[in-house]
Amino acid sequence: MLILAHRPFDAVQPYAETGPIFLCAAPCERHQDTGALPEVLTTAPDYLIKGYGADDRIVYGTGTITSSQTLLDTASDIFARPEIAYVHIRSSSNNCYQARLDRDA
Image (tube, rainbow, N blue to C red; front, side, top):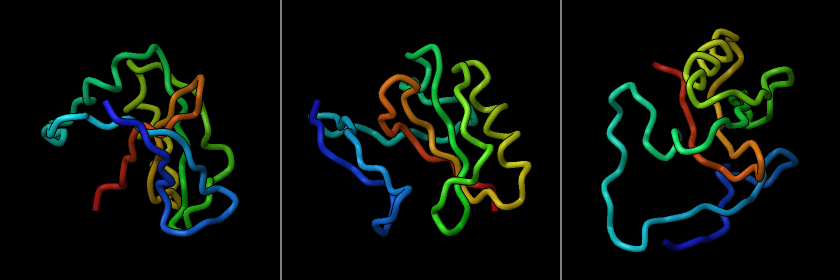
């Protein structure tokens, strides 16, 4: 496993958090979207998720800690707000970036 700093935003701004991400040391396959959570998002009991607008700013009122079992349902509730462009999934205890969910086209 490799660890490095990552900022999952194009530009530096107040909400552009930088944190550690962990990479496979050997080549590995990208997760195939099957509608199910990737295995890595089932290993912790809960996650912090936040909705962001198209301007890459956190949309207030969307940040919540949710269980891994309800993560997709909670993200769906956040996407019900039309101003949400995408959702970040982060560690609930350390705020480490895990994944991004994009609104369906």
